[in-house]
Length: 615
Image 1 (cartoon, rainbow, N blue to C red):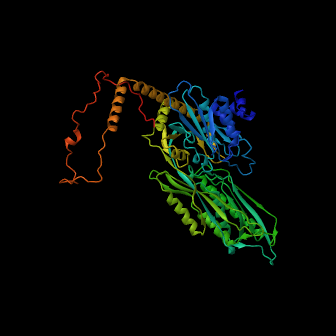
Image 2 (cartoon, rainbow, N blue to C red):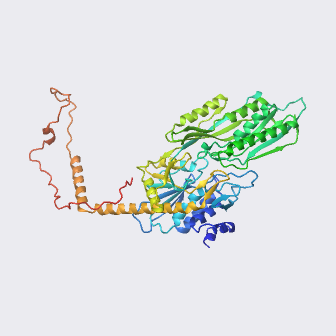
Image 3 (cartoon, one colour):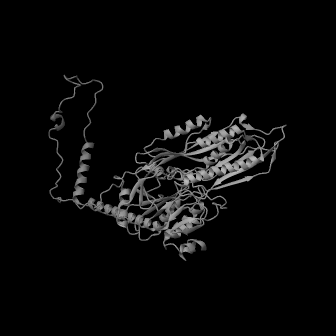
């Protein structure tokens, strides 16, 4: 009945029977059934709104699509509020040949040897497990302090939700992000990023338009590479995973170097802007039928060789190369196409485009990287009004200590070397870092991990992007950290969630929240009790008296009409100020009665057992 009230389908109910009985998994399975593509989060917001109305939570949605939910305290009204944050959208990638509509179809999740994974698509555990955990915490009645949950929009496609977040919305002083992808680890820093766009526009001499007199037949064919390894362009960029864009472009060069004249008409490569391209497709025109057979064989040899080289570095996937041919077209019917030389130039641009790690720290951590996310060239129309133009999109990532100017200069130099149009950087997000000694969010998470598992957690910075950089910019006094469950192969169709890390992460988070609520409630109660003691009242009276004497200090009248006579030695600072100038008192002036402090207790009231700063 509980699962049916959440709206789970019979298929999800059967899957829930094989999982631990907990609200986190029930909510996660419900989220799998809700379409959550970037900029299409209305359905999940409606689900959260209905859940908030059912439990009586306060909620709001801002102009950027973010959602804020608050739950008041039940038995700890003096405790400070704590905020949990996750993003609602997911990366939408499907395998080649998989008919799937991310705007309508539910994720087909299933269990595989202790992992949750999806059938031919991304799973959406990034960041579905974070949203489910935050909502389950709100539903947990054993947590009696005040809570706040921030669900951001469009994180995977530019972080526009966090960028447009209201700067006076969050009331908490501590925020825990739930978007990390490794169990028993506190993420204490992330990389910043920005997008960069370059465009290659061939000249008129590079385009073969429809001939008017010469009669000739041309033979179109298509090459598609799919199901490559792919992966997160920040967390997996150091593993030297092959890019589908590079492989397809290198195959074009191999064909041309073999003396086979082919003309490219269109090119589309890349999946999401924050993932390594796992698929690419290109359309060509050959001048002879036998050239198609030879070209397909060369492409197949290139893909097979690259797959064998990569298989020794990462866990491989069943790469797929598909080829198809079209009906022959007469010269007067074919569309404009690039010349053989222009086709070679385009392929060289894509193979020489920088992609991978740019800078490593002495410890071997990635400091900056460039990822060629997308490359697109649409086929021109028959009339030739729209000439072919190749647009490439870069994702640059950099640590907070590194400079983004070097990355931008590298892309600008590459663009100028190939006569490309260079556009200003866009979708810039800030890096973020928490100090391991001064961040009380890290200290509370560390103590909560000790109480839950009896040992300290791992702490490290990641080269991926989190929204904490954007949130910390709008809330400078907000102390942040990030945790999460174990997720592998994010941003690919091999994404999977380790089941036995979800509830331990939930218990760790709950222990941290309870510890924070207990400490802050004790602090406020003891502060209020201390403010009511005679010693505190006497000190406050003494401060008020001193401030009143400062306010009554007489002002020295100024005589602008006649300057005072110059004394010998004037303008030189005296070695020691005269005591007479500081102790002069008008004869007969009354003194303020001294405060009697002898009746005050010798010892102050008890202090809070945990010392920390509230703001």
